[in-house]
Length: 338
Image (cartoon, rainbow, N blue to C red; front, side, top):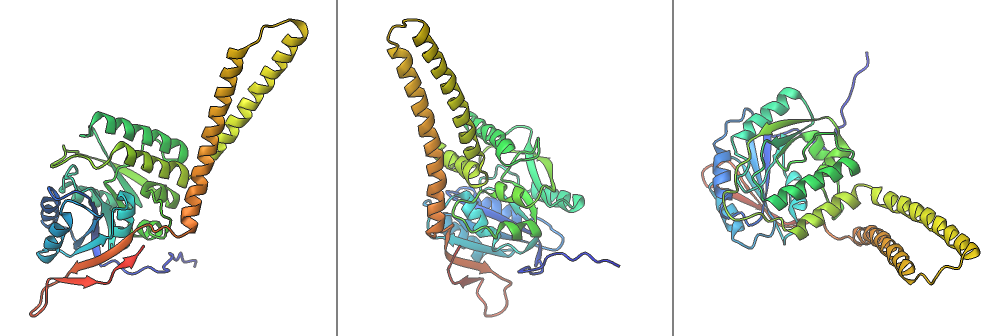
């Protein structure tokens, strides 16, 4: 009789049914309410919270430390040395998660905490490796929704994303997917790209999306462009292929134009074509610069990866644990580099 054995290298048995990983940046106005609501959830098999402070300048770290000290469920606080970005912070948190399933979510309370139980139940019932959420209506600004739709369309093309799948930051992953995603050590992670490299065994669940509880979105146009470039360049050679195809197309157009110019010169006496010449030069020069920029982006990222640019630097890890006489509420662990 044949037996199927799952890979177990580096794997440890899950300690909880669910881990909830929350990257925190400028979340002082909402993180305490979110954590308290998550602590009230009833999860069979238990749950833990992993907070990752991504170099917040607004006092979020102090609030997170107080939450660890007064924790009612196990809480791990990962403090990064500076701001590295949401996806880098999520990866740092995934490496400290020990649940059979892991849910990632933002710190802004736009995803109601009570939806966590529905998401976990759907993941357990469907036995899918990843469950993404989607919304009837997103409570973001118009330009942010436009940017999300653009990123989603590009992901269809670049990442070979299943049609109709919305790449939400509120997602549930199995321990297997978390383990494989956490192997990535490059400095430019894109969580959804890593997930799609591991599995297409994906389902989706509709959930509610609420207006932001406090403050405003941390995603500026610059941050969205940086995230888009990580997806477009780090997880596909499609831009290089597009550059090659563009080069062939414009070479063909140039050959046709050259043949037409020679024919016209031999059969007619055309006037000097300064305007058409300048238009052709500017067009071809622009295309060349775009192609060189794409190649330069690849080379620059390759150089930063080869020289050891860190994905993140963990300054400190604090863990709450069950209280017993004479014990403090939190354990402080040594810093680490990721």
